[in-house]
Length: 506
Image (cartoon, rainbow, N blue to C red; front, side, top):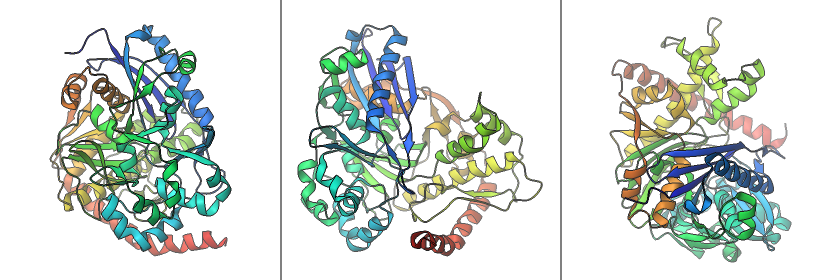
């Protein structure tokens, strides 16, 4: 058992919110601070962030967290950071912030489609991933083609959490979970490969790729400058960190091969751990994070981000500011599910089936209420998760239970809907900050407080609630899921036509 007087600091940097959470070595949360960032959309399809604001927010939440804990920073054994995968975070040749692109960006949609048609099969053979719009190498290829001036200034390619690690340590480093999740590594070796770069048309980018380590390896130590900015102790170890989906799985208690993690966050994440990666062209991606530790992922930007949009644009404008998500859950609870309820496609940010996909409500009638709209939105998100789960099942990675994490796990109604629709028990972890906890678990392994991931996960995670599926609801969801898929198929040519009109400026 690790020393009880040691703490572990986990950071979780998503597409919007950044959090700092201090844990003891039993996984108990000591203090937490969070701050919402500002996404920028300078052009349609462009979703960016100011890297200087990201660091301002990071150092503020770290300092606030430590002040709330009133903890001696010398007791912090190590720091770990998790962050959203893909997108593109560039430093210039002088190590100053150059560009931050988030994983909701679709500027490279056309180019990624061209690359997939030309080299998709070979790229999948190398990296177990095909090109897609906000994939890091696809964005690099777009920058090279469309912004050669910016490309010429680039000095280092990083991911969201790597930028924070760089500001903490001064080290330009990344790790294999984010790099393999971006399609930049040869799999299953988890190493750089020049052929991958050549196929993307960025063969000259090799010198921009950072030093590559495993997530729990020590990337560097907190510098004097970062210590003064954050309140951390100079010299505190900082590990490489994690692709946030891996961190969230670990923080929710998933660690063994065959175990499943579902994350209802900005993205719909559906993943199963394994000792070897699954080789199947229908699987979105596979990522590695240690020897004989892989995660097979089916995902798209179609999950709780849809609810966040609804709350931001409709609920908060309606004056329900104190607890807007509680308001939504209350409206859904007023609705008795019926076969002819409205349906919703959660494609506000496109779909893995096509960047041209768009969101929409279907089957509305005059007697439907806001509760019906919200239940349709919850179901639409759920149905996209199910579509991904079906793909995993066909690829030979089924599961008979799963842990649900992300914002969706905090809802009093969504976890039961997942259990009923998927027909499997759904567990929700005791600690809701699963991304930060997963990063802290890795920090504990990297600092030598635990001998293995199994030891760390066993000591630091617990189940808060178990949702058993209601067999009486399964036929209801099966029927509506079938209709949901039929409407999407019928809309394909219309979405394609709308995309052509947008591209032509008509």
